Length: 377
Image (cartoon, rainbow, N blue to C red; front, side, top):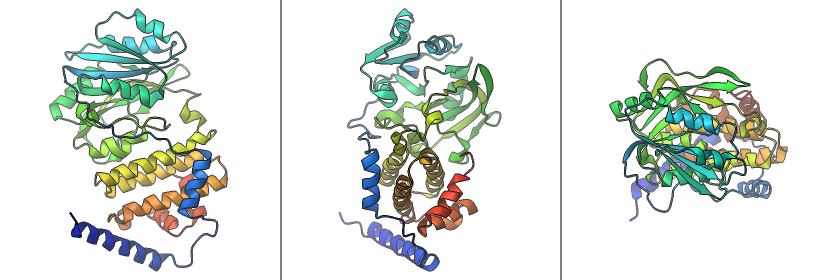
């Protein structure tokens, strides 16, 4: 059926955006910028967009026969796997849980280590290598928990983590509860991300860290959602989709996990591979999903602008042609939000400047601002 109100609203915001640009940025176009079609060709020639999706073709609903499903992808982790699993099975808790370990075609001794465990709470699934997203998705398909916790096999839970997280989740009927965590770097435990003491309902998405681990999620989130396979930076789905669709989110001051810093991991080597372009591709995928779900609101717009800084950081060492192409396509995504009524005037001064530079096509000023973005140095 023709929706006159929706079309009228779309046209109204189209006009408002056009007026805003015309009144502020006449004569400021950058001659270096290419068309959106050309920009897409440039990025695709270097790194084609992966085919992974964030929704699955059919719903997979947990029977909730246990309180918690802990999903552990396993690949080349023979040195850390035992500590990870032991940290789960040594938990003192009144809750029942399962550990779903997905041997993702690991060529080392990880499979043999898994075989040593006789704990009935452990379910081992062996598959050909599908990558981190593919392994986590396999675990989601096999889950039986009312809640889900993702645990990377080079990290480990701290004592009491399950009890603390589930107490808060069940007491508050929460969709997500996120705990604090510690960093393990060069054998030393260091401060990681510390929430205020106690249990608090969030005021903003910026109260949270964007990783999938360190949290329990209601299993209902994953009835239809999954990690986008074949992308790196798949964790972007947490901040741009899972958190926005959740109604009740709490944080805890208690440390629940130790995150092991990997000097050879994606975060440390970012910028040295063409796959760094995935950071833009997954952002585009998630803006499209937000549009389908009517999530193009003010808070998600603010979060999106932070994501642009992350995206630039990840391609900053690449050829300028790549960075210009990403800038052009990011401008197009920005306009998707503006056409849905977000208000530039409600942004912080820094983000307002970024939007103005981008709308003006001023690549250099936008990049100078993104380069100095908090947390990106």
